Length: 178
Image 1 (cartoon, rainbow, N blue to C red):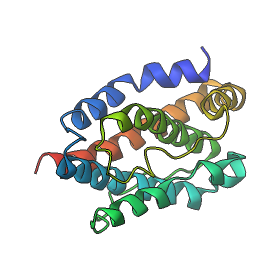
Image 2 (cartoon, one colour):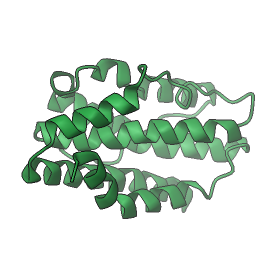
Image 3 (cartoon, rainbow, N blue to C red):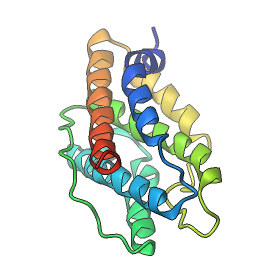
Image 4 (cartoon, one colour):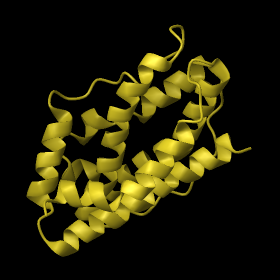
């Protein structure tokens, strides 16, 4: 099985839980959109920082172009919100773990593209409309299949992707179930 298919299948439950949690929000409502951004920031920012610390730039050739945390901060500032306390980010200890986490972050970019149509027209949208490198998702999937071809590396990427999804779930639960 190719890495991309293995990641998708093995993380489907975590992905579904995160989607269900965030789908409770009406992003056209300013308060809901602010909660969405806060919950995203609580997970996204520490995950992105952990990937930087783990050396993602040396593993993912276009990592710098894929980073979006600064846009999330920009949107929160535009809404007058302070940054939330971060969720504990997983440790990404090898290249396979980095690939697994990047798979989750880049998948969230696709999800954001679908969500942006439901956000109020006057809301800040830098995070949800962040430009993706041309063919970025397709290239990422090809790289996953190229770099993760052994069972052990695929399993390590899956574990990291699951932990990353769980970080987003924790951020969502903190802000959406309070």
